[in-house]
Image 1: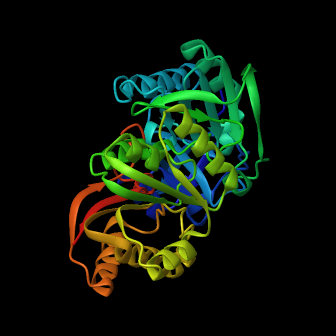
Image 2: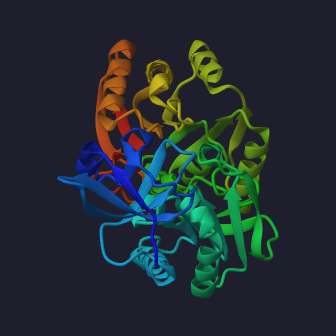
Length: 392
């Protein structure tokens, strides 16, 4: 069997040796006419025309990330290889999600399956194929998921912008089975409706699941959940020790689902449709004080060019939140911007504390849920930051 090969630079080979799974376009020396979606042999030339074999990768002609490593050796990955790796990812999460009926089953490169995301919502499974290689193997992955999990519904949510960078169409819909929305899931003792065909990401933000449960331990008095989306942070606070919970988001549709969730769990929450920056300023001017504030904004820095503006945005919302907190209040501050590191985020929080004149203690530094594991050598898999702070 003839297998296409790609030659890469010494710089890229060194990066691969350190565990990073990507090779960029600038480090491709010869792709020998490979086609997008091919599984290719990765090689580095040396000496008098010889080559060193570095493993196997998915090839994508249209992406800046041309190669995504699959394995570092052995035989060319085929159907049984991908079936076994998918099964291993699912097995690795056994017990991690406890009694919860929603969580991540496959986390792309972290599970050695580049570009593949699989999330479970009760008996519905949602799949994303985000690079040319996994897109070509979509039917194989769908077959494996059907055989191993027997979901009532298997859905694709490939309506994300990153697919355009891979030269792939955006699309979503039901692949197998049948689906009546919403799907009800159990998370942290709450029954929550999820709309896999309509919601953000694959239907919800599962990476914050453990942080939401952890934050509820600190809940008391009047709590504010800003950038709340469907209110999962705030609902956990209401289930915990909060006397009042206010949910703020710009999306009226998301707030309607939050109210629906509150009613389903016999929890009372107030919802406010507003721009969070404006809301925080107005509440501060009005002298409002909260015992707890949660900030879970969308990514302010989607690329390096946006980082300077993102730093200002994070500083502003955290400064305003600290001013709104009563003495001894708790601030839960999050960032999902990969380009903003944990250390940089901590510096932003320290600067906001100085400008607000508040003393701040770090109670917890947290990241994404354990079913979204980081991969050593691949910092892109470490993206979510969550600080739980006591402000006095």
